[in-house]
Image (cartoon, rainbow, N blue to C red; front, side):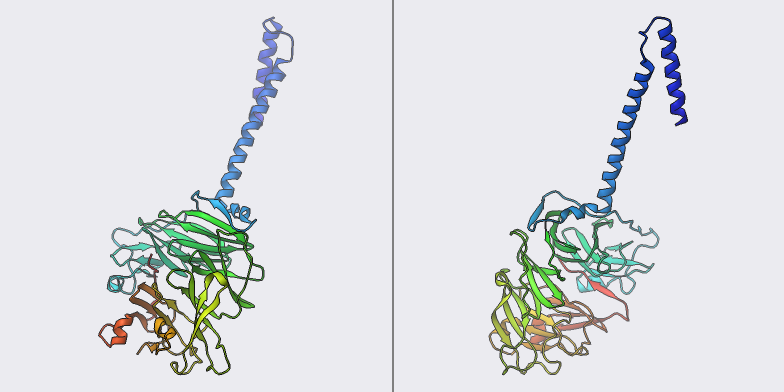
Length: 417
């Protein structure tokens, strides 16, 4: 301000001298020049302030607040991320990132794994021999292969984040501060407060083809995908619902008769789920059901499994489970939390044939099973990672069940793309 006052005084003295010598008309030219300069300065300050505010809004993800509004609204094809870059610790040449338990394990399982690194922190080790430091990605809930990169979900509800890890090992925050995030292949759905949204992850980790709607009141979180629909679940009161992003406003239609939804069956028009026995004559427990996705998950066909499960009251309604990509096999648990996993032949169950096989010599499942392909699944258990080949198991052939001890090391299997 002192420099500005000095400059204004010099301008006034100069113009006053020239006016006195008759070179300029006797008007307040100095005042006009100073006033014009002040207006220019104020305009430049305003432009700079607007630019700073705009950059701050984009960087902090405040634009999420603009997503609230009418349901089924697309945000257009423009790519984007909601969050700031996350620093990634680059491995030193003399001590590269390495899986702490067994560097050869991803290659042996033909699967990507997330686990503790030799030098601390988390690393992602791929089946083709690469290992990348996850840097600031600490708590990992799930990891998914998408094109040439990986989508990693971590954090607690309300602070849940989605990271993108590129092929070069650099990680960036895609979503931050969410109540819930679910990823399936390249599709992502999330909830933040009163907003429910979905998008597709591009091969570069950008969110494209976004849709948003008002989230259901009284709870309800995205937990998966059924064809073109987003699968929603709530616990109090319990129920299941779906949201079709390309339709009009989302109108909740909770189904409280379905106790579990495992995933979509081939074609996406039906899903495999669990329902209570339909009559008092059925044994205690639950029954498998084909659920009509476009009819509020109404059971289209039901298959109960009397006499096939010993103890535990039937299949678990909330234990770890996974349906194979072709809908042929279901790996799940019983109501007995101490029991090991069971393999269900879905087609045999609906044909009223024996369908349940107990996986032998395997301890309780501690995390979600992951299908590497339609014929191979990997199950995290209390003793280690179990590779399961259903056809070999049923035929009694070698390699049906293979256990890799982990000696207490926590390892998460990456969902293949």
